[in-house]
Length: 449
Image (cartoon, rainbow, N blue to C red; front, top):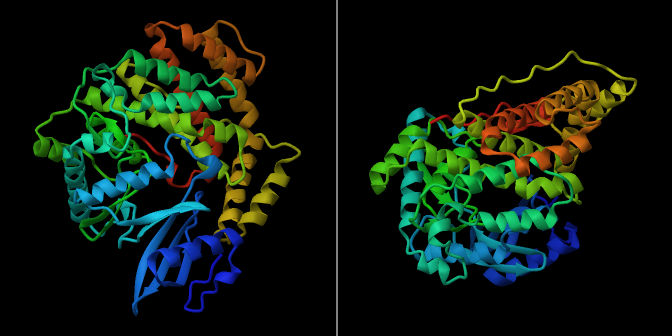
């Protein structure tokens, strides 16, 4: 961790960051006087650079590495930012792309994320209205500017899919085991394409922004920018609300409709919420199963189950099926339970974890402690419900996943409701085990519009 005071010493950094910071200083013609590494699962730094007698705040956004989705490279995001800045959209200036370690340098705009921290309801509503105005501006940019970057325009009959085929291709390249929930969602999406033809540049992960007071200060994170139906950004905004609560979305969506003249009904929003949400488990499934170095396992598991549950919930709702949540069984301690409790105590102590790495380990320990006490009973309950769908009880969860995927791939649409009901309950059982480690995803529920 770098020093955060004026005596910042780059020689204390790891060699890769010494190299990156030397690149930053050479690029902007200044000297880094302060550096703070952002506590998160991807490498990123807030930097204060002294240039011509004044301090300029900058941000180094590192590559995701092995835990990335693999859908788009950093060069894609940098090129999109450059077009957006040229079009006058409210985005930070990007200075350049660092070849090693991979990352890019941009201005650090003032403001903070998390609209739930707004000082008042009036400020929150004003920020959200402005955010939808900015998305309307984004959607009005000529798509040809992004096609010139090599961003693919979907065929007229595939506009609702947007870049979903790219996500599916990467998912299948990395797939190493049965994924019945994901396969169920993919099949539902391809069977239920709405008739949509308008094409615009999409943020691709709407809701990434920072604000101050009652104003948006910058739109961020265009790594998933693509061409598709503008309504897709509204669906992804609804999904973003799960992890970064935005408040009541209905007035802001009505404002977008009034601004653009395009009314979007609930069925269309549900489709895009389902499609966007499913892309998260598609992207993280291989990470969850393989746990490459640098994985924040509890974070990725949380994304996998919450963003897997939401598509199943909305599909069940559209099928008219009410899903009753499973109840947590009585705790069943084992001979090893105390060891799990001890590990949680050692890592967590009586306060927050001292480092990001320690916090990663603490969250896994919290998860395993719950799995030790409740996991066996919840797995038995899960196998009982799989038996209702298959007509026989699998011997274990591996057999259940394999046979469920086979069922999903041949099931008629009439089974969508029962399958969706099962997948919702399956995800909720896993969320019950993850509960102490869920953080911002604890109790997340999609807004019903």
